[in-house]
Image (cartoon, rainbow, N blue to C red; front, top):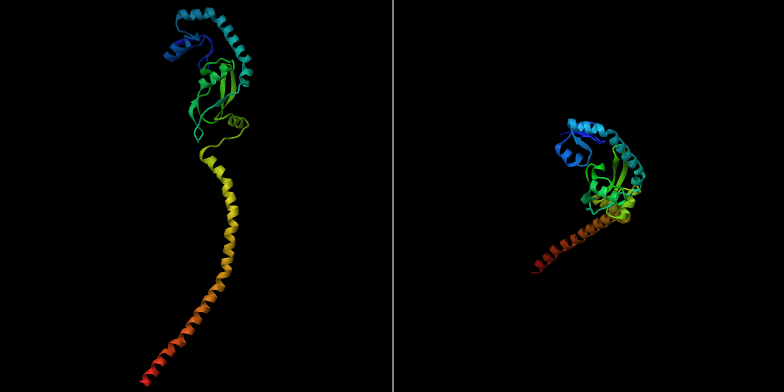
Length: 233
């Protein structure tokens, strides 16, 4: 649809520009909000007659936006949300949620003025911007966590870990402690085993030799005893 802008619209144009937009966007937002006129020769003449008034209104809106910059910067964009073990949220934080938070602080903006892009779906700190006016953009940081303590940690610049990483970090001190206590216990028996094996083998060899020498006389005597009995018979 061809329209005439009656105020500056980001990424679209400024006052008096004639632009083409989607029909739904024009009918559902721009025209009802008084941000544009449907293009026609009659409306073009209407715009020219009201141009000075529209420009003055635009300047007033910009001045109001500039007066709200400090208020936006002072807002704490802290979002408490439930999340799983990996840090993924049960749900998300959208531009509408941030707009509600601003409304609670007395700053009324529409959700499209929160330049968030995609909804936030994980725990962490995220940079975004609030467009109070097409010429007045305020950068802000949104903190999302499960508790107020985690929020404070994020604000302090710490990085929260979840899932496998967290388990590994918690397990590392225990593994080190186990190695320190187990190492001496393994080394001591190893040294004693190495020194005792040679004498033990020598003793076993001597014992085997003595057994063999002891058996040989006994074996010789038995046949002699049998010969005596034969002569006697």
